[in-house]
Amino acid sequence: MNKPILALAPMAGITDSAFRQICGEYGADVTYSEMASVSALFYKPQKTLELVRFNKKESPYIVQLFGNNPKHFAVATKIITEKIKPEGIDINFGCPAKKVFRHGSGCALLSQISLSREIISAVCENTSLPVSIKIRAGLKNFSALNFIEKTQDLPYSAIMIHGRTYEKGFSGEVDFEIGQKIKKRFPLKIILGNGGIDSPEKARDILKKFPLLDGLGIARGSWGRPFFFSQTKDLIKKGKYATYSFPKIKKIMLRHAKLMYKDKGDRGFFEIRKHLSWYVKDFPGAKKIRKNLVLVKKSEEIEKILSDRLRI
Ligand SMILES: Cc1cc2nc3c(=O)[nH]c(=O)nc-3n(C[C@H](O)[C@H](O)[C@H](O)COP(=O)(O)O)c2cc1C
Image 1 (cartoon, rainbow, N blue to C red):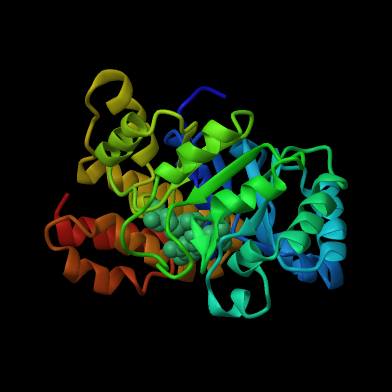
Image 2 (cartoon, rainbow, N blue to C red):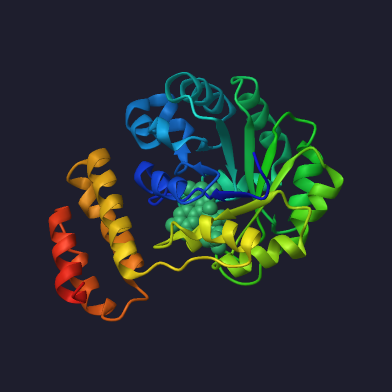
């Protein structure tokens, strides 16, 4: 894969098949699923398999797993490898959400080296696919560097590091230096920096300032802007990028809605609403049309609202 790698980072409730396809069409080199519970896959896999299903057009695609039981990780990895056949499997060591953290999953594992080693081994031993991990900069006194030092001998190939500690949640300063430090110590691991990258300019500047990073994970920066990836690539290669006029964005919105509907049926029209609001947020009259867009039930309605209100 060419570097820098620009990945669509995993986001529960957001990185479904339709959004991953759209981001892939606009330059994302790799996309991650929403996090999938290994215990759900262990006990009752059908619903979770639906969650991580993908369209072959989407590749390369990585399924992210979360949980805290190595046996469940082993079984879930086999199921995903055989039934979903993605390009890779990722393990979530970074989620701070209460319902995940309280169960000792996600970021709570950062301080539990021996259990984390068991989990990584369970995944690596049950798939021939590349395995990656997603971590945070730290948890209490435990730093990501320490976690990597103590697990690096296991055969996972890539690390996406959200440069905020557990305590910082989703805001505040992001430490990209820690990704560089890890790369310096363990040059064979692929390192993607993540956190707070909300414009192509910022993405370019971070890659310049931290040249050891192999790439970046983009999460909220892609909301309403799936072309973030191609814009960043153009900025790096050509020093500039094309902006998107409203008619172009409207086309993307309609395609996104169509893909969502194809994949999820009527439920898709509930789930597309937040995306539609994000797409229009910087356009004049956005407040007014958001009110209507959040009620849409059909793609013709989206088209009508956009044409009526913005007169295009
Ligand atoms: C709504 C939402 C859902 C998320 N879900 C996941 C997830 O399922 N797995 C995961 O590892 N990280 C998840 N994250 C964290 C992101 O992947 C990313 O690390 C974080 O948002 C920081 O990047 P950003 O500042 O570019 O948004 C989620 C973040 C958000 C905002």
